[in-house]
Length: 158
Length: 158
Image (cartoon, rainbow over all chains, first blue to last red; front, side, top):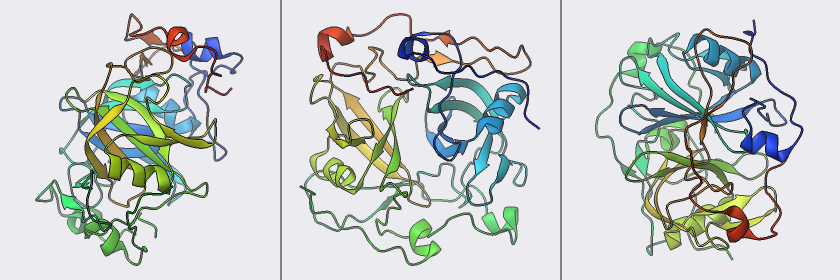
């Protein structure tokens, strides 16, 4: 059930970039990417996708909703794990095809693998060998995914 | 010319999520999204896309390279404007289909409209009217896009 938020038709670059009308551009799958950061640290927690309904639900409820590409359903983040994301601020970018959500996370974890952030590994940059070994920036998991998700299928796809 | 960085074949969820092998997953257009934040403030500056070559160039040069979807070319950020992005840290997410770049920005601006961040407008959340008027979080442009880009075509597409 889509909440009642109006999106405007995109009519000009000036409207989209310089205006006050919410006129999001969804891609050929009806989605736009959403960067979610921890409001008080700036840490990027995850990159998710929203369809029109997920964006409307996020706006009206103040809790993050995404479109699950692996399960093909609206995904109220935390509905299974309890790790809901309370929206502190929702921003949209210049051409209105990407969202930035600043959130407070109940339970302080957002990643299905058990880490605080999905971005728990870095890649060494600069001159170096062809094989760049990933470095774990988070040493310990914040929660045990088996205990939280049980036998639910892993959303990662090869 | 692709730089010499090796990507591994994706063979298992454990390898992708818990391993040290760089095995990025590009979408059907050969791209993955990249969140770029200001290293010292955590502000999200932009959301761009990288193909394999852009990711390899970013890793080896330590400067952000993207794939321009509007111009269909490798885009060395700042090549036109001088607003290059020096990589402080490059992270990859759990299923290796998204990048987080922490950068220092020469000139302190990343948005082609002239703002510091592409995400210069917020959308009011919570209960409220159907029409949500965007709120400008940045009051003044950091640079004059006409002076910097001249007559180059605007990348925003309707």
